[in-house]
Image (cartoon, rainbow, N blue to C red; front, side):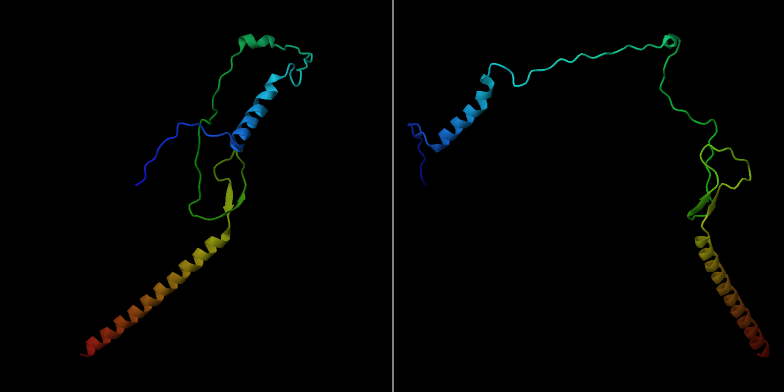
Length: 141
């Protein structure tokens, strides 16, 4: 293992020292000027103070405006909204048409349910025919 010894003689000035000295001079020289770079120009401004004479009897408050009655509406079935017949804030009465859904999704569901009904009827018919056949076989002995 090697031993490290610290030298008591200072390092000789080289190009790095000169570079640091140059940077220090460049940074400090701009502060030695007698006058500022740009003088601030004061420009006159014309203004008028406007006061509301009635403001003494009024006060301002922050708040949120909410309706007294709020009704959440929705469709009984899911689907895409096709048309909206009432806008926010409109007065509506019971029975008014508010919106319609696209019929595509409902048509697909209807066809699927009709197909399920057809399969169920076929299965019922087949089970009834088998029951009749088994009954006849049982009676024959």
